[in-house]
Length: 521
Image (cartoon, rainbow, N blue to C red; front, side, top):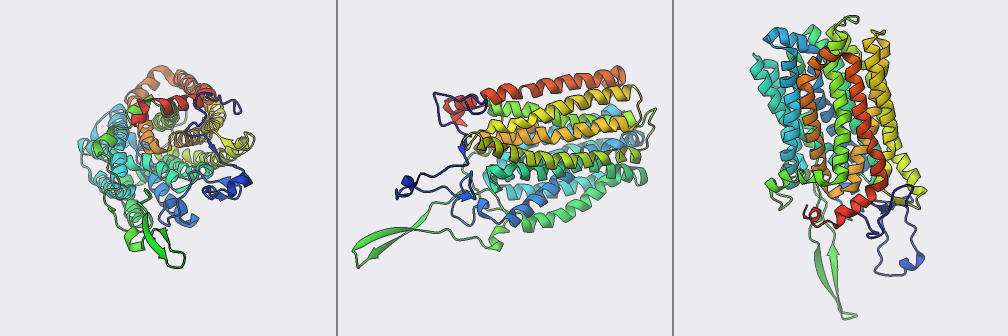
């Protein structure tokens, strides 16, 4: 047993379990067939990089960080497209003569659904043709739909635009986190994912803040127009500085050399030539996989039978849906008595939440890697993906307190800083859960990571769609106390599964590795 994680006596070499503090036996070094693993300091690199200069794992840290920054910024802007319009629900209702529930469903819920559905096809396209063309086409489509939203003349046009925009946003939901696993090693993933999470959190919170002022002073359509301008700046940055990160080592080229002096024949491997900058700028590198597009598109569906994937999907969905829930109800809660806030003032309530989210994201990213390295060191250098789930103790406890406190404080009409403080606790908790779930799936099933994220986001989309269809009317009928107590109980119940997954997760991984059914995928 490794610190509470049960071993499988029938299958000692379980995928996902790695030794990142391997001490090399001197006797091995004398074996000419032995190849010492590549290290950084005392840490064995996982995954092991190739010797090719075209392997993204071998790129410079600055190159990797530029790629991560551009993709994270694009993700942040894209994530903001959903909640940014919530502060303008009343303006949209007045302009087009529709109800708030209709707006919530058509403008937010349907977009979430098409995003979740679109991830099946965009992840498949990335697996077959690479991530670079998918990212660039996505950015172009987001630019076009944002411009469409600025000129939309009726509610039907706006609704259709949002459905298409959701599909265009799909790659930024799943492929960025998968890109992190292609650029960085196991001991770096937590911190690097926290950078992405930081921009996502900023998109949710700052997007609403900025949109509140735009809507109040210029009108809700200008939120789309300004987003179009931002995408116009992102597209060239993505073209010039985000190369293809999917790498498959080509068959080695060899050369036969005859040594006349010794009369021996040697076969040497010719090192792979580094691609030129102009070669890396090509949008389409050709087909990088012979896998069927349609098979890859539906590959995420069987992944719901992988325990680590379905557990992470449900947990991630509940925490992400919590952010959507707050975004959908903020206007309803804070525009009514006793708060009576304007759209810009409601947007300002997200400023302290962004600050708290910033701290939570950075702390969770640091803790994700620090805890893993600390626990691994005390487990004789053996790393288990279940160590990532330790972060859920923070996420579950804080989020439960936050939901209950928020519901009670709003029901009591407490001073505005009280419910905002509880929202801050919830905002601080969410990055811990997201970091735990993304890194856990990456480390359990690295070859299925992109498709696993599709499954996770699709379940989140279904939950968000259902919630957007009734949450405002449910809140009006039941009140804040009842709504948020139910949310807290559901959230705590889902989080509680982290304990059995921590204990039995390795045995479940072992069963998956030995299952004839799962080996097909």
